[in-house]
Structure formats: C-alpha cells, structure tokens
Image (cartoon, rainbow, N blue to C red):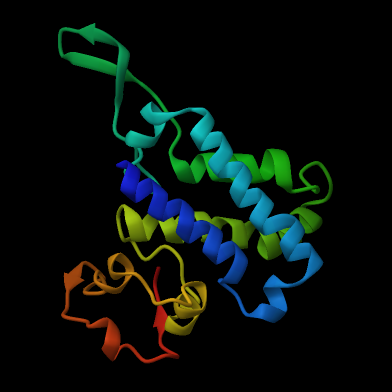
Length: 184
C-alpha cells in the first residue's frame, strides 16, 4: 500500500463512520461515542507502527512478507509472521471496545453485531476500495456513497465497478441506480 492509498482508505473510513448510514443512525449518542472513536483508534495504532507496517498492507487478509531480520535457510528466507488487518481489527475491537468480552456470550454477540460490525465495515470497505476490491462489505447503496461524499464521489471510487464474482463486466458508475446495492 502506498501513501495515496493509505490516505484514501483513512478518509473513506472516517467518512463512513460519520455518514455511511442514514442520519438517524449516525447522529445517535452511541454511534458517535463508539464508531468514529474506534476507527480513529485503529488508525492511530496503524500509524504508531509507522511506514514499514503500512507499506506491507495488501488487503484485508494479506500483508507482504516482512524480510527485516528474516532467517536464511538453504531453501530461502523465513520472514517474520505478522497479523493481517482483519485479524488486528478484530483483536482491537475485542480488547479495547467491546465491553462484554468477559461477560455473557449473548451480550458480547449483541454488541458485536450492532457496533463491531459497523467498525469492521468502515475499515474493510475503505481498504477493499483502495487496495484490493473483494466485495467484503454488503448492505450499502450508491446513495450511501453519495451521502459520504456530498461534493461528488471521487473518481477512484467511481471507476472499479466492473469486477464482480471474479469476472470483469463493463459497469459504468452513472448507470448504477441510486437505490442499487453495492459490494464494497
């Protein structure tokens, strides 16, 4: 991931946290107290690791190998294992944000469905759009992206809609209906 992709990812995640859902949801006290601060916290931890960690991010599930201090063997190098973004986001949500981690499974699941899912959506949808489209986040419509970008949806978001289910199809942003569902 390069710096431009990282900045787009971060901007998208913050915009989704603030405006990715209808106003009646994003303006609630709970949403404001949980989703945006959690997304900010995740990016603070990513930036705390600085550039080496950022440039190795490839997608939600993959990082490029870290060859720093790699051990050399006759068959090649053994790199330092690292967690992918998806694993780290889940860990951060569990360790820092879900107040029910050590309580009942029912309360844990209820909180995770309501708030953890939204935090995951913000981080993953932005990463998928900037780095490697995978269709990992569903349930959003074109109007949701337009609400996130009131000045106009950027070109880097409007263009890559031709790849679906492993096949390229010519899909033009302007031809997508306002109410059509998108796989971010």
